[in-house]
Length: 137
Image 1 (cartoon, helix red, strand yellow):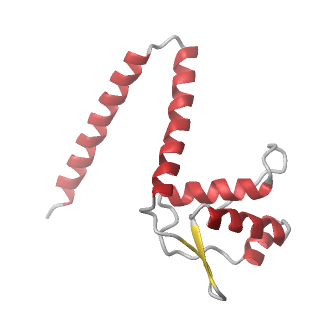
Image 2 (cartoon, helix red, strand yellow; image 1 turned 135 degrees about the vertical axis):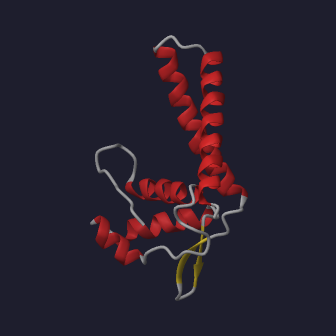
């Protein structure tokens, strides 16, 4: 599990951990049932106080992202939960907002963006279908 923290971005470190773990879970980079690193191990990797990691894990548990098993560690909850979907939608919404802001700065209207998205989606589906056909024996 790769987590990167910054002491200079204005977001508390425990929230950086929470947000990154949520992203990793929502994106499928951490699977349901997968164990998170022990608190002390992650604290040593990030060079932070273990209490900060413990607070992040508590927040993740309250949000339903992880579950604690007594003396057995902290594990990712079932990714089919509504939380995982909400997190995925939140991530995509943030990217759409950034795309729209950039498009407005370049004087590109929303209809053009929608057409571009549809064109790119069709191209990606065609490429995936072609790759699938090439894999068949």
